[in-house]
Structure formats: C-alpha cells, structure tokens
Length: 133
Ligand SMILES: Nc1nc2c([nH]c(=O)n2[C@H]2C[C@H](O)[C@@H](COP(=O)(O)OP(=O)(O)OP(=O)(O)O)O2)c(=O)[nH]1
Image (cartoon, rainbow, N blue to C red):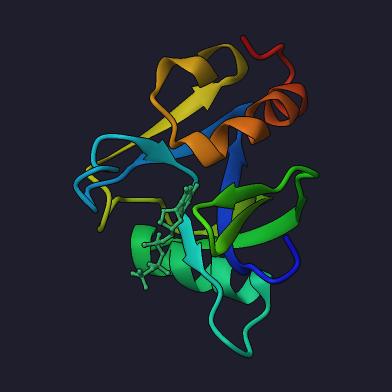
C-alpha cells in the first residue's frame, strides 16, 4: 500500500471508551460511522493532519498517543491508518458529523462502521479492555 495516499483517523480514548463519529457525506457514506480525521496534505505529518482535522471537525485539541498496527485500503488510491489519541483541550462537538458516540469495548459493534474501519476494531477492543464481537 506504499503508493497510496494516506487517510488518518483518530481513536480518541477517554475513560475506557472511544469516540466514533457519524458521517453526513457523500451520500453513500452518510449515516455510517468512522474515526474522525481526513486526508494528509502534502508536506504535513500524519500527526499534524490529525490534530488539524480534529480541530476542524470537533473543535477540540487532541494529542496523538500512538498508531494501531492495522492499515486498510480505501478504494484504489488511499489507505487508512488510525492513531490512538487523548483529549488535550476542549470538548468534542460535531461540526461536520451529525452525531458522535463514546463507545466501550462491548459497544463497538453497535454502530455501522465504514468498511475500511473494521480491521481496527479488534485491536481497539483490546486497548479498551474488552473483546470485540
Ligand atoms: N476521516 C475518515 N475517513 C475515512 C474513514 N474510513 C474511511 O473509509 N474513510 C474514507 C472516507 C473518505 O472517502 C476518505 C476521507 O475523506 P474525508 O472527506 O474525511 O477527508 P478530507 O476532509 O481530508 O477530504 P476532502 O474533504 O478534501 O475530500 O476516507 C475514517 O475512519 N475516517
């Protein structure tokens, strides 16, 4: 997946839960859940891209902790990586999504994740202290 452009998502952790956000666009992804984030711009580090996107989308400051091991193709041209992060300032409020949820390990399968996000859930469940369904 070396030649693909990078999309980064943040698994924001708090009190044994992870933040999930519901997309509103494009129409085929509307209503499905993701890790907030977006495309890394040229010259930008993945960490800086995440911090920028999360501030734009949720109005809060995060600090990246580390990266989950999985990577997942998105279509033909992009690849998804997901970082764990903690809140470093402010309270997340959805500006571009139409809902957010804080999910515990045993709630990860309660939302309809975008397909590329699913490979990350098992590792995340382990970090949250439960086993993923
Ligand atoms: N942010 C994010 N995007 C994801 C995830 N899973 C997944 O398949 N995607 C897809 C949806 C989009 O096709 C693409 C990211 O585009 P985006 O629209 O969120 O990013 P962006 O704001 O930088 O993009 P744009 O407006 O410039 O198109 O990756 C995920 O967990 N988080």
